[in-house]
Image (cartoon, rainbow, N blue to C red; front, side, top):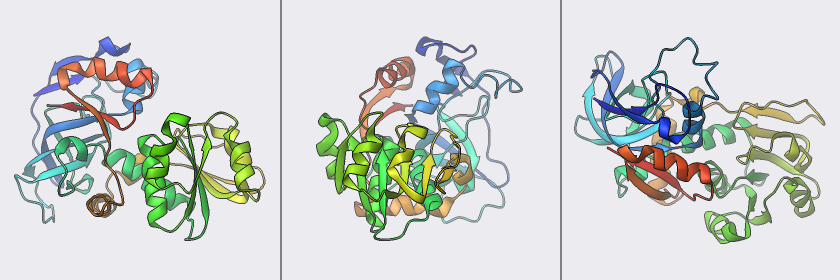
Length: 312
């Protein structure tokens, strides 16, 4: 089985083709023939060695990739599902060693798999599971109600964009950040108020919402720098595990996608919302898997809107 990964940490060129043993679906699992695997910032962190300490007990190679789409090939014993072999499906993947989405085949828990949205191809569908579920988890953690105000940083990105759209679907007022070049995009996603992005974005949010927002989803990873935008007793959802010093009764909610990796009903709900137009699947560009290094270079150069996707 062909895969793409690293045996030594490094820059994009550390990625190379691997030949891995074929796996089959065990009890409670499904095997997918991958047609598309999305490239996310977390993949570059695995590749460059920032997670080396956490991986010290796991031997190489290391295969990145947290979401994929393709054709369902096998259904293991004990799986209760209405999916059938041959259907196009998408999946959330929690990488571990040689298990990652940058591969011709993946074996994942059945709870990590859902049909792709009707009308979407595998490339577009692959962009939904990881960022969509992370956005869902952030909103679930904040527990806001219709009429509440949420701020979203990094709103032009995939996670931030999904938060904006999911929040609007739930009747929230959305304040989002954007560069001048991305302002129209963020408004099209549904933001009610758009402020200029930057390290001091909290001041601009407070200018628009003097009482402070009820919750904030920090896709820009500004951490403590955005606390000033939040009202006393509000909440902040962070995406890199940040949990700062408590102040003014604000609650930190570090969101870890592994917590929702087998929430099949939530993934299927995202499918339905994509079908209804509540969520927009955004593909920046697709590249063949052998150009994974180029995809990582493009991502790390910044400015990508939508996701880069590897095809197998």
